[in-house]
Image (cartoon, rainbow, N blue to C red):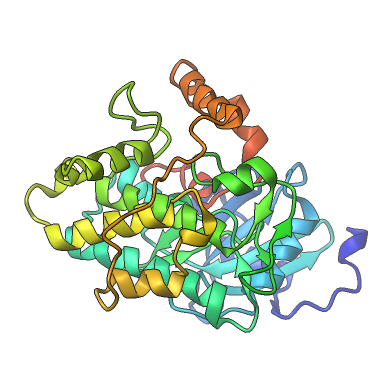
Length: 358
């Protein structure tokens, strides 16, 4: 823990005694998640506030750097669509993060798992706009300009009113402006990473914009970009969505669970924004503030959506396609671990499938 000594953290510091009291000494009945980062426990502070406590495992691959990174990033940020960090505890060998408790788990759980939640069309639309506003804040409005690097449905949590809150800032990076890129090791989740970042480690805000576009498609379709491929002719949800738009069949993309209870105009707008966000050329992707305007109907969406798969013939992207093909025939995904070096909020939720909690 030597790199944590002497750090002045800009957040509330809880004692281990307080955390143990809140979680009933980390009682197993309060455990609501488990992942590479460690365990997550539901707790209640002495003032009655419900919290979710992340306990860093001593075997965690995430380590001290990401722990401090998450504290440093999120403790400085306040926005309705970002998860709130109440504080932390660094005592002895224990590293703990104390978050607001969000009773409706992750967006991924609601979309892809057996869940009692019903995401009707107005709720899905609200979630799309909420995520966009959260990212616009990170990229353009916050005093700290931040690239999240791992935007996906598993890292969006839902509160009691099904408002979305972006979580998991362990991989986030500070940046100067949209014209400055960061050359960095590639970390994130395959299927959500922008091609210029996945292939060359070229990181700007536009990498988050690309990931957001994928999440929009998942919200509209109820399908997972990596796992729910409609046929062998398409290697991911994005590929299929572009095909449907080109052929005037976007209604086929809408989640069957919605039936006819959705706005076609809003659905078409979301899908077009999603495909604009995922175009292969970063400069053609909108800023997140522009995406918010398009989603809310305050800004026109371009009629011509650029090709999303400029790198289709690139052998390195062929390798990504092969990766997807291998996953279909494997019960485990050891390769994905090489790409996903962070633990996600979904992993923290999946420990108890019946839980509708953080």
